[in-house]
Length: 96
Ligand SMILES: [Zn+2]
Image 1 (cartoon, rainbow, N blue to C red):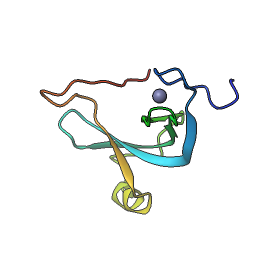
Image 2: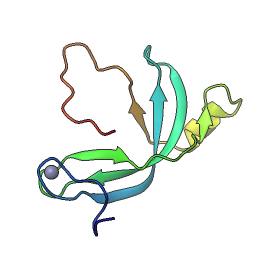
Image 3: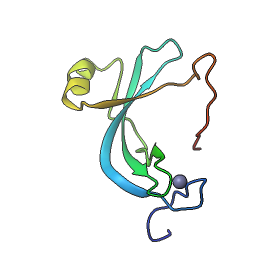
């Protein structure tokens, strides 16, 4: 793995981890809750882009868990993870 991280910004600078252990809520197409994930927030000091990557292999919680709402509250702040781009908005950053 390269020194700073294994994520290279499109501008040509390796991104750095801004915060380990952020929580992402994966949302269904209709915007309803689906899964909670642990991931890392990275930033590019060159152009200011922030992305979230480094997701765990398994979710922290799934929507059918009885304690999902409690976990969601405990893990706030939550970054929403929408599956479908909003109408009329172009997607400019994507990570596989
Ligand atoms: Zn950049």
